[in-house]
Structures are given as structure tokens and as C-alpha cells.
Image 1 (cartoon, helix red, strand yellow):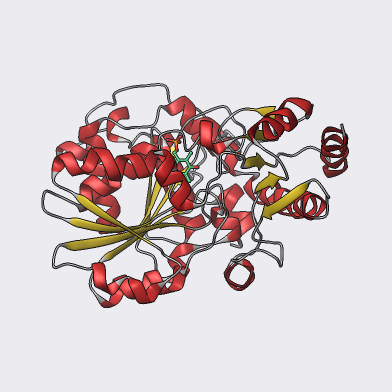
Image 2 (cartoon, protein in one colour):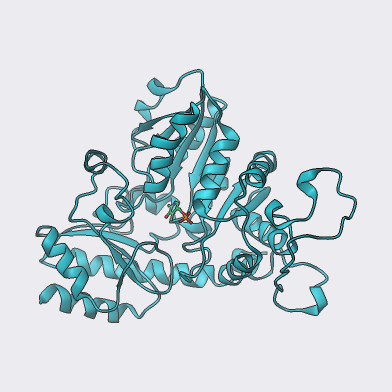
Length: 380
Ligand SMILES: *Cc1c(COP(=O)(O)O)cnc(C)c1O
């Protein structure tokens, strides 16, 4: 099956339950004992193994081209459980300096209390990595397209570097989705997602995904079982429904974002636009080589101060001033006060996230309506 067909048909149970065309919701916390040999195989919602979970696991593994996949209660549940399954006291991690704010906080503040330390490196510069590897370095963590600067770091080099040293490579593929990038085909061991974003795609649930080698995913599942980060069956149903339209949504958002980014780059009031699909972007060469599309996230800075940025955000009428991304509604935010508010001002500055930076998650509206809206708001 090709990707679009997998979105619709992979993982669907055969025979169909009661001949239902759409996977029904199994709203039962517990199931009659059927001879399971160990605790983790007892059927129970917290053990992430009801029929709604199983169908999603098979579909997601097909989409990412991995042996196994697991859904979780949120993207952060996927990320924290993955790291806690791989790392223990004394272990060390390499991570790109420019991760999602919640992940950065987890690595910089929470994990050190458990004896797990992280060195943040510039994943654009492979020649700098080896100096930070210790005998306890177990993994390297990156994101496919960083947020909000939309950088594509040296992904193939990360996968190769970790494989050569017997480390585990982990990639957060939220921003690209398997429509634009399939990390397993590039050698990544574990893929995590905030399925809250594009995979579900409708701004109406919180969910996460872990995909990868079966033995690694099984270890993450045991951790999720104990930490309690299972996905509820109703959220499974919504994620399952959202996934079927992933390819048509993401391809539309790729095209719409490219057009809007081009418009912004040509506007006299805009100083700088970050979008990997633009030839002016520092990551354009990598994005063109590895990604099928630049994704739906654009960030930019006006020629002006924070007040000018705030004014634009209040003047646009279609984009909603809200965090998160990947849904039908175009959202606009200032990362310094939302997604990256947890970082210190120094950390934000080091990563190049100015207080005046504006981020847009391009939705599914007509591109021309968005451009007209920005034209009016910028001209006012
Ligand atoms: C939103 C997001 C997360 C966290 O996901 P939640 O579903 O909110 O827990 C992690 N990584 C990236 C890249 C995100 O955008």
C-alpha cells in the first residue's frame, strides 16, 4: 500500500467489528481475562492495549515505516517516557540547543534531579559533537524542523554518528509528519510526536506517539504503563479519524505556508522570514534534499519592536492568537511569551528567538484570504 492508502486502510481490524466501516470506540476500561501470560498484556486502558490502541499502533507503524508504534496521553508523555525508558542515573544525552520548550525544560530541569544530564549542542555542526561524548552518553535527541526558527539540522549525520557509537537516535517528527519526512528511512531509532498537532490535525485533543524498533518501543510501553500516560479510547478515536486526512491536510499546508512565507518575505515591513521552503533560509538546501515539503510553520520579524509585533497580532482577523499548531485554524503567537516562555531570556537569546519573533501555524483557510488579512494588518 502507498502512503495515502495506508492512512485510510493500514491497521484497520479484519474482520471489521460488527462490519462497521469506521473503527468504533471501545469504551471499556477492563476486559475479560483471555490467558495473558504477564501483567503488561492484560487488557486495560492504562496498558494502552485496547482495540482502539491496537488499530492506531498498527496504522502509525505503517506510516512511519517502523516495526512498532505506541500512542500516549500527550506528546510530553511520549517524550518523557521514551527518555526515562532509555536513561537512568549517571546517563548522559546529547540534544540540539533549540528544542521545543517543554522538552528543553524536561532535559534542563527535571532529568538532572534523577541523575540524567544533557549537553546541548549545535546539531548543525557535526564536527563539534564528538568532544561532548562521554562513556555514559546513551542517546542524541533532535527535531526534524525546529520551532519556531524552522531549522533543519544535520539529521543524516546525527543518525550516522549515533549508530557508529552504539547510541540511540531520537527524533521529534511533530513538525514534519511522515508526509514530509520519514526518519526511520534515514536511520533514526526512535521517533516521537506530539499527535496533538498535525497527526490529529483538528486542535481538539492532546496525544503523543512513539515509533521505532520493536524492542525499544516495548520498553517505552512498560514505562508508560507504570507512569500512567495512556491515551483514552475517545481520544484514540479522534486521532484515528484525524490521521485519515493527514496527507491532504499537510500537503495543502505545505503549499499555503510557502505562498504566505513568500508574500511576507517580499513585504517592506518584514525584516526576516524563517521558512525552510524559501531559498533564503539557512536550511533550504537540507530541506530540499530530505523533506517532501517545508511544513506549515512560518516565523518572522517585523522592522519594529515588541509593540509592533503585538499590534500585528491584534490586527489580523483570521489567525487566532493561541499556542499550539497543526490544526485547521491558522494560529499566531509570540514564542517568547508562549511556547518558549519557560526558557530563560539568555537561553532564548542563545537560540536566536527574539522577543519580537512572531510564529504562524498555517491552517486550512484559503491562502488568498490569509494574504489579504496580513496585507491589511501590515498596511494599517
Ligand atoms: C507541542 C509539542 C510537543 C508537546 O506535545 P503535547 O502534545 O503538548 O504534550 C513536543 N514537541 C513538539 C515539537 C511540539 O510542537
